[in-house]
Amino acid sequence: MMTNFSFNDVLTLVQTAAIIVALLLTLYFSRRQIRAFEVDLETRVLSDIHGRFERIADHFLDQPELIRSIFQSPEVLSVDTPMAYYIFFFCAHIYHVRQRGLLADNEWTGWLNWMKNAFRFGTLSTAWKEGQMESWFDPAFQRFVSQELMVDSPRAT
Image (tube, rainbow, N blue to C red):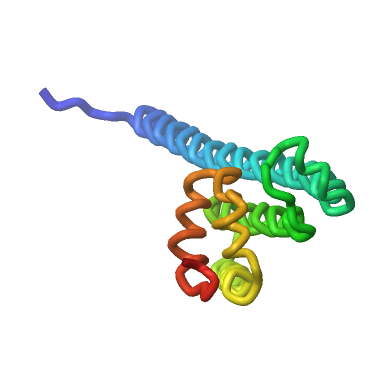
């Protein structure tokens, strides 16, 4: 049995197919926009948290003894302990921004070199090991420090 399609039938099929394609395209681009919005929202939240931490860090830098409110160590804290922790937090922030794909390769390379040099030529490697700083950071950042930053450090033991 052969069915003959009239011009109106073909036109209706083409219109239906066009509507379906338009709906699929709309769905695709809507999902992309929602993902971009989620990344933007997450970035804003992280920036807000970072800003709040900076205010706390300012207090710690001004009055290092305030660190005891979050960490009571039997040893006397050195004057540079708050600065070391702040730099670690800054490095962790850069690392996590990179992990989220928000930092271009060229910028990441520059910051990675900065972090490696800070560990190599400063006292950060000693502070990381002896000051129990790693316990304040997430496991991914701890692995990054041990595998990437502590490797070339002459102070690391």
